[in-house]
Length: 489
Image 1 (cartoon, one colour):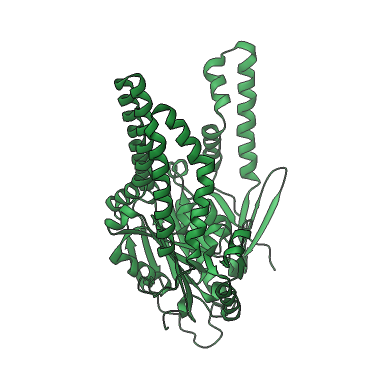
Image 2 (cartoon, helix red, strand yellow):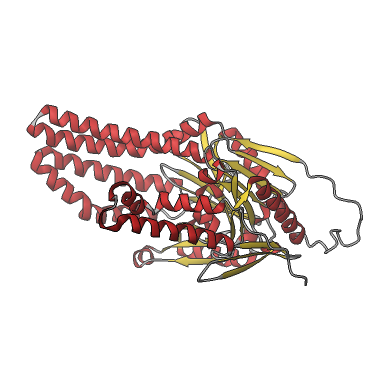
C-alpha cells in the first residue's frame, strides 16, 4: 500500500487553541498581566508563560496530521505522548461537522468521525470550512461505499456499470424557534414552579415570624430566581438547536443546528439503536414533543446531547413524519401495551416511606417549630403525593413485544415512549432486589450497542415468570435486521 498524502490542520488552529486556552484555563496569566505589573518579576513570568503557550500551540499544530487511505481515515497527534489512529471506513457510525464560536469567527470547523466504541473517534481540529465540508463529504461517501460492500473500483461488483441515480432529498423536519422556546419553558416550568412554591412558602413562613416585609421579599426573590432559570434554559436551547433541520438523502440522515456554534451530524438509519418520543406535562398540553435516538457511537452520544436528537421539538402531527421518515417505522402511539405487576405500587410506597424517614420527617419536625400546623401539612402532602405517584406510575408503565420490536412506555410527569428493533438487542437480563424477590417481581433490562443510559431500556416490576419468559424470548428472537426492515410488519 502506498504512503497516503498527509495534511496538517489550518495554521489558524494555533490562534483558536491559544484563545480557547486563555478563555478556559488561562485566567491566572491574564490576572498577572492586568495586576502584576513589574512587581515580583510578573513581567518575566508572563513572558515565559506566553512563550510556552504559543510554542506549545505551534508545536501541537505541526505534529498533527490526517490522511485518507483506500480503507481508513488516519490521524496522528500529540507532542510527548504520540497517538496514531486508524478508523476503517466501514466502521464509521457517523460523521459530523461542528463550528464552535471561536473557530467560526475565523472560518474554521471541526470534523469528527465516530465509531461504536467510546475511544476510537477521530476529531480533526481545525480546517477551513470549505475543506471541512469537502473532507466530510469524501469520508461519508467512502463510508457508505464500504458499508454497502462496494468494490475498489467504485462499481457494484459488475452488476451494472451505470452510476446510481442521485438519492432523493427530503426535508423531514424544521424546528421553529418559537416552538423551541415554548417547549423548554413548558418542560422546566413545572418542576421549577414546585421548587419555587415550596421555597417561597418556607421563606414566607420564616420571614413572617420576623417581618412581613422580609418574608415577602425573600419569597419574591425565590420566585424571581426560578423564573430567571426557566428563561436561561429556554435561551440555551435556542442557541444549541436554533435553525434545526433534519434532512434524509437516501440512506443518510443529516441534522444541522446551532445559532452561534453550528453543528452538522450525519448518521445512517441502520445505525440507530433506539428511538424515544418524550414530552412533559405542560408541553403535552401544547402538543409539543421531542424525538431522540441513540446510536452506536459511544463517545459522541455521551459527549454532546445535540447528537442524539432527530427533532429537539416537534408537534404531535410532525412526530409521526419524523420517526417514519427517519427509521421507517411508526411512532408506536397506538400500540396496545401490556401492564406490569401491581406490586410496583407497593414498592413505590415503601420507597416513599424510607424517603420520608430520611427527608420528610426532619422537614416536618423543623417546620413544626415555626408553625404547629406546618408539620401536619408536610405529612399530608407527602403521603398524598406518594400514593398518587405510585398509582400513576403503575398506570403509565407498559410494554409491547412482537416479532419486529420492543416498545416501552414509562414516566409520570415526563412521558417517554421508546422502541427498539429486535435486531439491535445486544443483551438481555433480569434483575431483582431482595424486596423485589419477596414481591415476586423483577426488572427486565435490554441493552443495545453504545454506552450510557440511552443505550439500555428497563421494564420494571414485571411478574418474575413473565420477566424470565421475555428474557428468553428476546434472546432467541433478536436476530432480525435493522430499522429499514421494520416497516413491512
